[in-house]
Image (cartoon, rainbow, N blue to C red):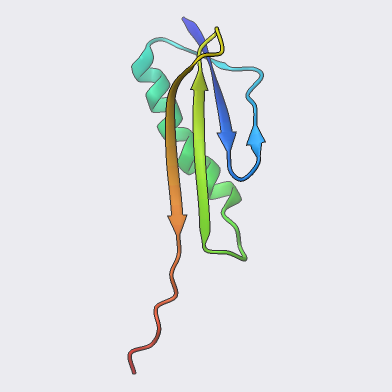
Length: 81
């Protein structure tokens, strides 16, 4: 199995130094897709309505092989009364 690194950008950049072994590229994509909502559930800003999370996946040669982005935008809707 090959090792892939899942770096996170959420306004700051967190470099994955450990990585994760994945059986194939489909597993890499699944892990990136699974990670985004899990991270969003932990760091959604309580005082704001906007957040963009991006995961950048690098292979063992540190080449970017996949990226995925999750965006949250909240909007207060004015009363129609």
